View 1: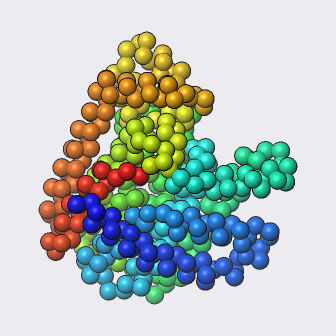
View 2: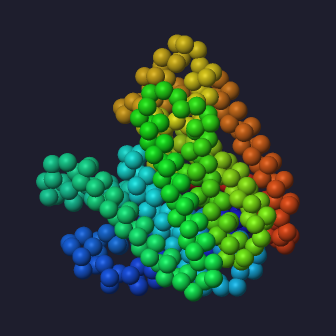
View 3: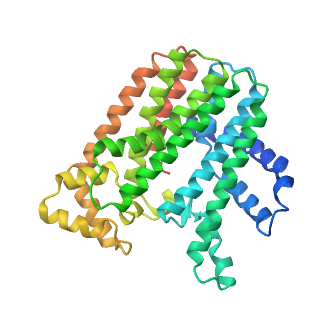
Length: 356
């Protein structure tokens, strides 16, 4: 069943990439003559944007098509721009998380390490991170400029632009919490962890694409509210599965090192529940393990065993099932063609059983 959803995203990603190419082609001449890194930075930003799965842009297109938005060109322009914003956020996220690989390839900051070493720069890591930070910034402003240019003749352009910028600001605030929690030794509590999940993943990755597609189709507020609520459920499923894969999957599958959440002391629901269920002696082990940059594979395996033996994995799976049921119930309230409702039902399974 999930093959149909995957094929849809792959097809739409090809279409979105044509528009991504156009964004960079149209803007390139404005930027490449600035400094020695201009063309190099633009090219790396473009390649990262082209390399994503296109889920956010694909969901925007799906919603706009399902509700018969009239301006298909604008739908594609905004979808491509959302993918560019996503890439910029990921560049900054990789810096904050010290991740040197994404999608099985070096992250943007890691791509500059060979150059830094060839120039005998004293601190290659900080050099790479500094360059990547600016590249992420460039991506945001290219995207913002393109959104303004694309929507200038749209009647509700202010509402659309304001909504996008607000949601991205929310992502950044959630990232501030995520970073702070990671550096803190104590637990932020389940409520705060869920708030990060909601604003950093659920609203941005699912509710926002649904909402933008609906706004472009001029759908009523009640329908938008239902779509946003479905997006929230899907986002929690996505994040919970992401946390699970980060521990129980393989690096070749997820495109980043297994156990990176443990090394960075990420305050996930898995970690929160694990601490709640662990005995005092087990908590001592956890205290010495979470945040340990030199984490051994043996300790990762021990954490995995604890997650299973203490019932944490089962509790996470039950939580995922509850969000699946909630989303399915809400889909039935939407006034959609049967094929579009079926796509959303399949999307629930796609988000849950995905491998990366």
